[in-house]
Image 1: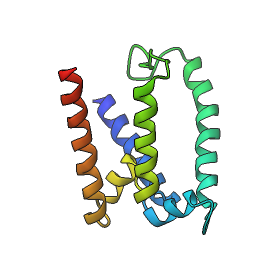
Image 2 (image 1 turned 60 degrees about the horizontal axis):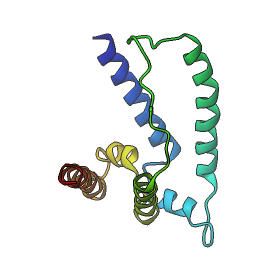
Image 3 (image 1 turned 135 degrees about the horizontal axis):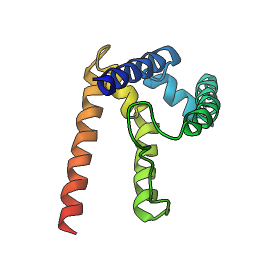
Length: 138
């Protein structure tokens, strides 16, 4: 039960942070990515704050040796940069730049104006399904 409550609390805090920072507004995100046009730098402070907070918090969290509600940290073991990673990152970045949503803000936006984010979330799920089908066949 503690894992469920802590996951719910983390999700709520993350969602509130997305709303307060403006990450759920695709126009603000696209404006931030439009460095050659009408650039809006405000999200630079959001991203910078996330990097600083994570850098500091991870030092304290990993110093404990294990998570509060688990026996071990589940960190990625594969650190190789390959074509699949680069291709996936490129698709993600292009999609984010074109429509202004990445997965977290798209899900958080479903409660405000669901028509746009719903298309994004369904597309993400379709992409995940397509990936599983392609991976199984290869």
